[in-house]
Image (cartoon, rainbow, N blue to C red; front, side, top):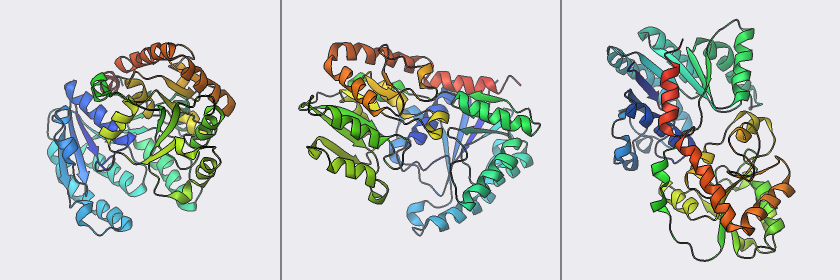
Length: 396
């Protein structure tokens, strides 16, 4: 059955991010599968990169309000302004909901005002409210975070028609919470979604110089274990003098990466680690396609156990060998020595050993990388993921 989906400002389209890539892939997959997608931008401008990409030409982007570039550069003002724009959104929802196809509001965020307004609009127009959560909900410790989390779990979640998560741990977590509340809301697993054509072999370029071990993502905090990655590289860099470590991600908040910076200062040759800063999608694709291998040393913490890294799909799409820790649901898809090099979570020595194994046998590493790439044609393919999403709404 054809459906109409509303994606309401799931992320800022002007900033490259794993979340943006994921939702573009899902929206594209839904459209190519026969559904309709309206992507509502609240005080956000659609970039020319997305607007001119034929892959997304069937997504109906609608802008409401003035873009942030025209506003006072104050995040609190923009936050309030977006809340006010929800009043204008009602007219759009009303118009779209008049179509014969079921209208589904796809909600991703977790901030109280937006969640409350989403519930009210869905109730008003008979729109089906579905929600996706890709991380453990209770991470913030401040009073404001605790209030937000309580509202999210006890008011918003019970009002959803369907919930989608990306790991078995999150599925169990939400099912247990809903059971305690006496609610029988379906919770489905929705895998990471990859557009293989965005990381094609034609994007690969010949790299001269050192073999690069590349990481992309968040450098701050302990989420992706960047400190562990740098430490592991320091253990093997003398043995493999033809290598360098490339870390791609925002570095503007130096105060939040002091541990990583201290470890870099301790290296025998800090020049062999490159911090690129934030790069656009084309530059990221160029870098990861030109890598010798791609690395992700997620530690064994509650955030990693409940989440599944979107970047892993980007890694696998290149066909380059992946060195990763087997945390959470990752071992359900990646097997050490078969389609990836999988290290024990939290064991820096083991991670260094897996990188060493990958580096010393290039021919074997290439085969393993190609086996990993097979996943982006099956379980992680954007069309398959969109199909799972759409079909799940027909079952109950």
